[in-house]
Amino acid sequence: MGVRVRDHRSRRRGQVLLGLLVVALLVIPSAGAAAWSYYQQPTTYAVEVDLLHEPGDATSAEDVDRQLATHQVLMLGRPLVEDAASSVGRDAQALARDASVRIVDASSVLRLRVVDRDADRARRTADFLADRYVSISSGLASESDIGRVSTVIPPAVLDDPVGPQPVRAAAAGLLVGLVLTVALMALLRFRGSGNRRPEP
Image (cartoon, rainbow, N blue to C red; front, side, top):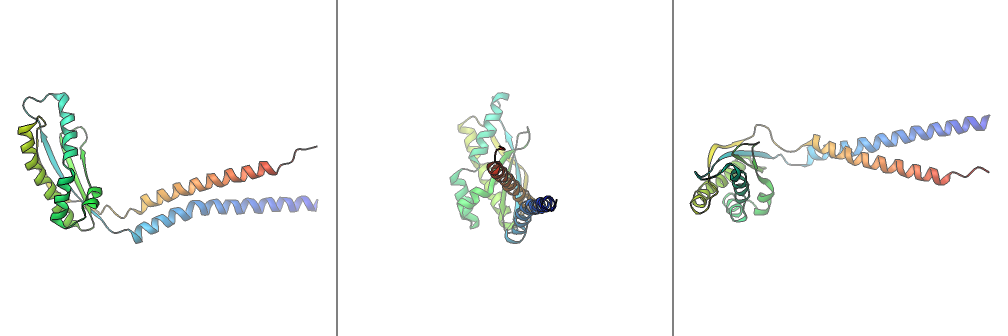
Protein backbone atom coordinates (compact mmCIF):
# COMPACT_ATOMS: atom_id res chain seq x y z
CA MET A 1 0.00 0.00 0.00
CA GLY A 2 2.83 2.42 0.92
CA VAL A 3 4.64 1.67 -2.32
CA ARG A 4 1.48 2.45 -4.30
CA VAL A 5 1.03 5.78 -2.49
CA ARG A 6 4.64 6.71 -3.14
CA ASP A 7 4.28 5.79 -6.82
CA HIS A 8 1.14 7.93 -7.05
CA ARG A 9 2.88 10.89 -5.42
CA SER A 10 5.88 10.44 -7.69
CA ARG A 11 3.68 10.40 -10.79
CA ARG A 12 1.78 13.43 -9.51
CA ARG A 13 5.02 15.31 -8.90
CA GLY A 14 6.23 14.39 -12.37
CA GLN A 15 3.02 15.67 -13.95
CA VAL A 16 3.30 18.97 -12.07
CA LEU A 17 6.91 19.40 -13.14
CA LEU A 18 6.00 18.56 -16.72
CA GLY A 19 3.19 21.11 -16.65
CA LEU A 20 5.52 23.79 -15.31
CA LEU A 21 8.07 22.94 -17.99
CA VAL A 22 5.43 23.22 -20.74
CA VAL A 23 4.29 26.60 -19.40
CA ALA A 24 7.91 27.78 -19.32
CA LEU A 25 8.50 26.61 -22.89
CA LEU A 26 5.47 28.58 -24.05
CA VAL A 27 5.91 31.74 -21.97
CA ILE A 28 9.68 32.32 -21.93
CA PRO A 29 10.30 32.41 -25.72
CA SER A 30 7.22 34.57 -26.28
CA ALA A 31 7.99 37.03 -23.49
CA GLY A 32 11.68 37.10 -24.38
CA ALA A 33 10.98 37.86 -28.04
CA ALA A 34 8.53 40.62 -27.13
CA ALA A 35 10.99 42.20 -24.68
CA TRP A 36 13.83 42.00 -27.21
CA SER A 37 11.68 43.64 -29.87
CA TYR A 38 10.50 46.41 -27.56
CA TYR A 39 13.86 47.30 -26.04
CA GLN A 40 16.36 46.39 -28.77
CA GLN A 41 14.70 47.09 -32.12
CA PRO A 42 14.89 50.71 -33.29
CA THR A 43 11.81 52.81 -33.88
CA THR A 44 11.05 52.90 -37.60
CA TYR A 45 8.64 54.98 -39.63
CA ALA A 46 6.87 54.36 -42.92
CA VAL A 47 6.06 56.84 -45.68
CA GLU A 48 3.59 56.02 -48.42
CA VAL A 49 2.88 57.72 -51.74
CA ASP A 50 0.19 56.72 -54.23
CA LEU A 51 0.73 56.82 -57.98
CA LEU A 52 -2.01 56.39 -60.55
CA HIS A 53 -1.41 54.26 -63.63
CA GLU A 54 -2.70 55.87 -66.82
CA PRO A 55 -2.87 53.32 -69.67
CA GLY A 56 -2.56 54.35 -73.27
CA ASP A 57 -5.59 54.86 -75.50
CA ALA A 58 -5.02 51.55 -77.29
CA THR A 59 -4.59 49.53 -74.11
CA SER A 60 -7.02 46.68 -73.63
CA ALA A 61 -8.41 45.70 -70.25
CA GLU A 62 -6.36 42.49 -70.36
CA ASP A 63 -3.13 44.50 -70.69
CA VAL A 64 -3.69 46.70 -67.64
CA ASP A 65 -2.59 44.06 -65.12
CA ARG A 66 0.60 43.40 -67.08
CA GLN A 67 1.37 47.10 -67.28
CA LEU A 68 0.81 47.60 -63.55
CA ALA A 69 3.10 44.68 -62.78
CA THR A 70 5.76 46.14 -65.08
CA HIS A 71 5.66 49.51 -63.33
CA GLN A 72 5.74 47.74 -59.98
CA VAL A 73 9.05 46.12 -60.92
CA LEU A 74 10.65 49.09 -62.66
CA MET A 75 9.84 51.56 -59.89
CA LEU A 76 12.33 49.83 -57.59
CA GLY A 77 14.90 48.98 -60.24
CA ARG A 78 18.49 48.95 -59.07
CA PRO A 79 19.65 52.17 -60.81
CA LEU A 80 16.75 54.16 -59.39
CA VAL A 81 17.22 52.77 -55.87
CA GLU A 82 20.94 53.52 -55.99
CA ASP A 83 20.25 57.11 -57.09
CA ALA A 84 17.72 57.56 -54.31
CA ALA A 85 20.07 56.10 -51.70
CA SER A 86 22.86 58.40 -52.83
CA SER A 87 20.52 61.38 -52.72
CA VAL A 88 19.46 60.85 -49.09
CA GLY A 89 22.64 59.27 -47.76
CA ARG A 90 21.45 55.70 -47.29
CA ASP A 91 22.94 52.34 -48.14
CA ALA A 92 21.45 51.12 -51.41
CA GLN A 93 21.04 47.51 -50.28
CA ALA A 94 19.33 48.58 -47.07
CA LEU A 95 16.99 50.85 -49.03
CA ALA A 96 16.16 48.03 -51.42
CA ARG A 97 15.02 45.97 -48.40
CA ASP A 98 13.07 48.86 -46.89
CA ALA A 99 11.21 49.97 -50.02
CA SER A 100 8.24 48.20 -51.58
CA VAL A 101 5.53 48.77 -54.17
CA ARG A 102 2.14 47.10 -54.23
CA ILE A 103 -0.99 47.39 -56.29
CA VAL A 104 -3.82 48.65 -54.08
CA ASP A 105 -6.62 46.09 -54.15
CA ALA A 106 -7.95 45.79 -57.71
CA SER A 107 -7.32 49.44 -58.58
CA SER A 108 -4.90 51.21 -60.89
CA VAL A 109 -3.05 52.71 -57.92
CA LEU A 110 0.54 51.78 -57.11
CA ARG A 111 1.46 52.41 -53.47
CA LEU A 112 5.14 53.04 -52.81
CA ARG A 113 6.29 52.55 -49.20
CA VAL A 114 9.65 53.46 -47.69
CA VAL A 115 10.66 52.50 -44.14
CA ASP A 116 13.41 54.29 -42.26
CA ARG A 117 14.50 55.17 -38.73
CA ASP A 118 14.38 58.82 -39.77
CA ALA A 119 10.84 59.87 -40.74
CA ASP A 120 11.99 62.91 -42.70
CA ARG A 121 14.56 60.88 -44.63
CA ALA A 122 11.89 58.30 -45.43
CA ARG A 123 9.69 61.09 -46.80
CA ARG A 124 12.53 62.53 -48.91
CA THR A 125 13.37 59.07 -50.23
CA ALA A 126 9.78 58.32 -51.23
CA ASP A 127 9.49 61.76 -52.83
CA PHE A 128 12.68 61.19 -54.84
CA LEU A 129 11.62 57.73 -56.03
CA ALA A 130 8.12 58.87 -56.98
CA ASP A 131 9.20 62.03 -58.81
CA ARG A 132 12.00 60.30 -60.65
CA TYR A 133 9.79 57.41 -61.72
CA VAL A 134 7.01 59.72 -62.92
CA SER A 135 9.57 61.27 -65.28
CA ILE A 136 10.86 57.86 -66.33
CA SER A 137 7.36 56.56 -67.02
CA SER A 138 6.65 59.47 -69.33
CA GLY A 139 9.61 58.45 -71.46
CA LEU A 140 8.63 54.79 -71.34
CA ALA A 141 5.09 55.60 -72.40
CA SER A 142 6.34 57.10 -75.66
CA GLU A 143 8.65 54.16 -76.34
CA SER A 144 6.56 51.22 -75.17
CA ASP A 145 2.93 50.41 -74.58
CA ILE A 146 2.87 50.36 -70.75
CA GLY A 147 1.23 53.71 -70.05
CA ARG A 148 2.52 56.24 -67.56
CA VAL A 149 2.06 57.00 -63.86
CA SER A 150 1.41 60.22 -61.97
CA THR A 151 1.42 61.06 -58.29
CA VAL A 152 -2.09 61.36 -56.84
CA ILE A 153 -1.29 61.39 -53.10
CA PRO A 154 2.06 62.92 -52.10
CA PRO A 155 4.40 61.22 -49.61
CA ALA A 156 2.96 61.12 -46.10
CA VAL A 157 4.36 59.66 -42.88
CA LEU A 158 2.03 57.11 -41.30
CA ASP A 159 0.62 58.18 -37.95
CA ASP A 160 2.10 55.27 -35.99
CA PRO A 161 5.65 53.86 -36.21
CA VAL A 162 5.86 50.47 -37.94
CA GLY A 163 8.52 49.19 -35.56
CA PRO A 164 9.28 47.78 -33.13
CA GLN A 165 6.49 45.18 -33.21
CA PRO A 166 6.53 43.34 -29.87
CA VAL A 167 3.18 41.65 -30.50
CA ARG A 168 4.42 40.08 -33.74
CA ALA A 169 7.67 39.10 -32.03
CA ALA A 170 5.70 37.53 -29.17
CA ALA A 171 3.66 35.51 -31.66
CA ALA A 172 6.85 34.25 -33.29
CA GLY A 173 8.27 33.35 -29.88
CA LEU A 174 5.07 31.49 -29.00
CA LEU A 175 5.38 29.50 -32.22
CA VAL A 176 8.93 28.52 -31.22
CA GLY A 177 7.62 27.50 -27.81
CA LEU A 178 4.94 25.33 -29.38
CA VAL A 179 7.52 23.58 -31.54
CA LEU A 180 9.70 22.92 -28.48
CA THR A 181 6.69 21.63 -26.52
CA VAL A 182 5.69 19.23 -29.29
CA ALA A 183 9.29 18.00 -29.53
CA LEU A 184 9.41 17.47 -25.75
CA MET A 185 6.16 15.51 -25.75
CA ALA A 186 7.36 13.35 -28.62
CA LEU A 187 10.64 12.67 -26.80
CA LEU A 188 8.85 11.72 -23.56
CA ARG A 189 6.46 9.43 -25.43
CA PHE A 190 9.36 7.79 -27.23
CA ARG A 191 11.26 7.26 -23.99
CA GLY A 192 8.13 5.97 -22.25
CA SER A 193 7.41 3.42 -24.96
CA GLY A 194 11.06 2.32 -24.89
CA ASN A 195 11.04 1.79 -21.14
CA ARG A 196 7.94 -0.42 -21.14
CA ARG A 197 8.70 -4.05 -20.65
CA PRO A 198 6.49 -6.73 -22.12
CA GLU A 199 4.45 -8.55 -19.50
CA PRO A 200 5.45 -12.18 -19.01
